[in-house]
Length: 520
Image (cartoon, rainbow, N blue to C red; front, side, top):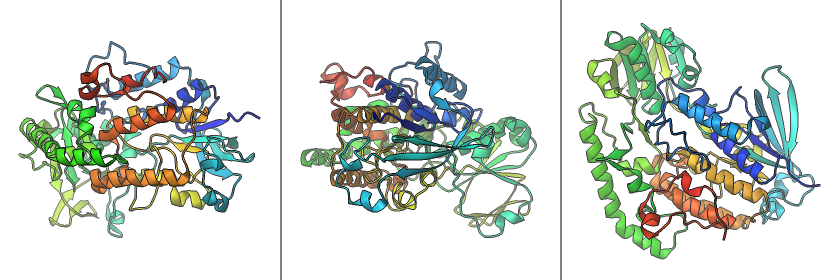
């Protein structure tokens, strides 16, 4: 029997890309989506949220944005319209089961002991292996009627993302939240609200966090309440949130997202000569970072408000800890609509927040925890078997052990697309989806499990060096080209995508470069 049953969990941008590329290879996938629509995090986000990158960088390789979208950073409404257009163009909607929550997945066939003894992934390095009973059982709940169904597929692709589902709740001293008489919610709950203006109007709002969502929420609250009822942000770490992706008219991609910039970095499995070159060029990378930092300190009042990060801009790029400021954010700070408070620890009182290291009280009616998500826990929780849960996301001291950022060397007949982060996740996810589709079609075999684990270790070393304490984000932003080269080589495609020597080395790489891949 031909093995062509492919299951995909999630219909965000990663799931849609996986569905499209799997269809291109002649498979008939079924996509399980818990929501009633496509789009993933874009389907439920803040009203003020806009694209974090230019449209040339945030797009599918085989579909440009419409010419009618002229702004550099479109609103999330236009992003959703673009995503829907992609799904319609390639007729993906008929393969999606909406309101279908995956309760758990379990591998069928070989036992844990047998799998751990294999030298080749799925026994022979192919997508479907040789075992007649191999595959995945998926338990799905229909959220409309409440029924539970069981599906079986020969290959499973998880596209569940990192920025939704399982909130990251900060450690709070015992009994603190119970004392508080106001409301406590996570930014996830806030993003699902229909009328947030009514919810926050006239209230004392305190936001915990210093990332993109914290600043976006604060900007929305400030727009509603103004300086009469200022919103407070309590933060621990200052991040590089900037107002544009260029300095003096030169796009940052020319500094970080072209081939010449890759020579300044140590890369996984790079070899001795590349290692020596990256070491010799490290002062240049430092100098580039300092120039960019100087520009943003000059163009944004970071020093005035004590918001200059403690780490370099280059580190922000390599660790995916950079984001776009809401429009006019520091104008709101200057007018008193937003108050910034740095604190290492906090607790609750009956009427608000106590900043423990500052011995200061902040009156609060509503506290919003903009503290991110536990993508690793979300990934673990989808598996029924404990052995999968233990190994799939790595340990607290390691990043997720994924070969080519999407295959676990010890979990057969499964791929994970969209878990590793990049500056534009759609770009990285689609390349991985394309690679997985070629693998499913028999375009190549995986190396031995030992070889894959060696590669995983090399990538983990890179993440520890360049991502620092954020290594678990598995950020690949500044070596996206390096990874894409490996993916292209695996499927037998020329990794050099530009026309001409100068363009190849100095022009930024992006999604459009991988449209219509030509084979050797």
